[in-house]
Image (cartoon, rainbow, N blue to C red; front, side):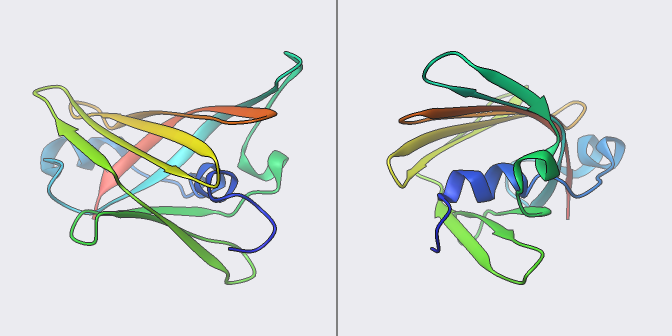
Length: 138
């Protein structure tokens, strides 16, 4: 990957508008999905925080969850793409929880199966992200 960490790309990839209603009807955690960010909060290790959307943090627009390839993939506006392997996946009655790590950062993505709401966090040296949004099955 280029100069940005995968997670920055992953976090930004959540900017595609998605419909939560169709998500609840068809997502089982066994189908692909696309997600959209509603809010992004980034905090430094000095506890300085900033809130905005993915564009506020110069992040790409799309995030795709590919369950067959076991990856999360983003595509930036310039056409660059990045992906991260899903290391663990847990499907419960209420949630789909995905976890991985890339470029010295750990990430956890939790999707509510009833309404498609998304909570994503990433921790690492110097900068941490918290993201809320929505997903829809493809």
